[in-house]
Image (cartoon, rainbow, N blue to C red; front, side):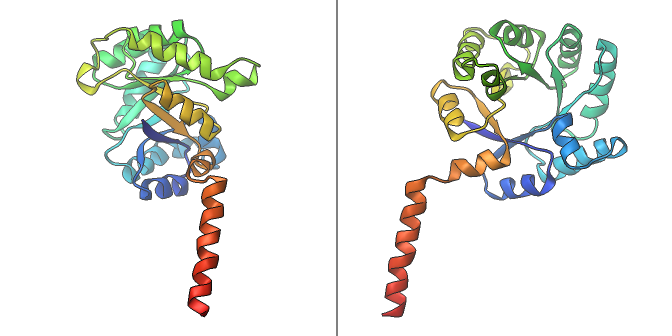
Length: 226
């Protein structure tokens, strides 16, 4: 399974990239707002991310509301760098926009997916990536992992002509909050997990690992001081 980082923070992206595990970056308006970024600097900020991550996909989300505006903004975003992926929220306006952009060779990440029918529609419209949410689904008292499994099974049942050479469409497990979410997504064959940096760091740690490291360090200290 590939690891994407879900952030617009340049320092977090640099650190994750240095780990050698980063396969992509996803952003959204909320994540960009957390950086303190301004509207006028948005596209420049996306360009900075793409400069850090030259050879991996970087999702930049459109805030347009109509099909025509989504297509226009998608083209503008895609022109920032070759690795930009246009992120669109699933809705009636975004499906034809996705189709238009896909036929032009522009990759789309369809986001805010909460059901299998939404995912199937996105795949049929030409989405390169499909992002079902786990954590937000669980906020409603539902089983986000079960819903993710349904989406993965349904989408993987079929072939889609748009991105066959790239192996798409790929399922991005989104709204990941815990290492458990990552484990379950991997078990069911989700292609990607996009993980906030705090949750990504949790994936590195385990209480027994931390205990073992502390024990090794204490024993080695005895050797040094012998």
